[in-house]
Each structure stands twice: as C-alpha cells, then as structure tokens.
Image (tube, rainbow, N blue to C red; front, side, top):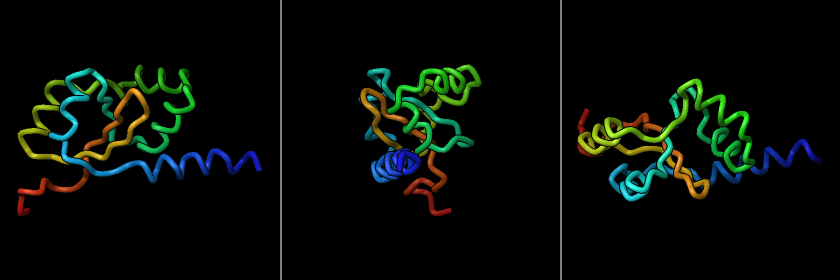
Amino acid sequence: MTDTLPDLEKAKVNLETSSIPWAELQRFFAAGLAIAVADELDLVEVAYQFSRDNKAQVEQWLNAGLIGHVTDRQAGEWIDTNNSVWAVVVRPWVLVQASIYAPANNPG
C-alpha cells in the first residue's frame, strides 16, 4: 500500500498542472517566486520533490543548473513571444517549464 501513496500524490500534482500564458505569472516572477524547470526534467516529479521538501534532490538539480529562478532574459523572451508555460504551484513557488506549443499568435 505504501508504494502507491507516492503515485497518488504525483497524480494529484499532475492534475494541478496547467498551461498558462507567461504574462499571467508576472507577479510571481516579480516576487522572485517563479522557478524555471529544465525541459529534460519531469515537471510533476520536480513539483512532487518540492512538496516532499526533498532538499537533497532539489539541491542536486540547482547545482546542475536544471532548476533555478526564472531569469530576466527568460521572462523577457516569454513575454516577447507571447509564450505559454506549463506551471504548477508548490507554495510559495510557482514551477514553470517552457511550453512545447507555439505561441497563440504565431500561425506556424
């Protein structure tokens, strides 16, 4: 039974993720609460580890440059391209991952 608890918790996190225009997350970025997650990581797994307060794993990702505060450059690019991101809230953080979808105003 204990093997399924992490699976259930991850499923709950997965249900809480959504694609959202980056512009709608500006206040979190301005407050320093937006965390960028590298494309090669699973956003749900990262959110789960944050929610479990797994400091060792989070530190490993930080040191490897796979997670970190959204940079001014990233935020500017996402605004300029009207980009959407995948996002999930793990209080106080908003974890974001660049969306694989083209911007809404880009026909190609």
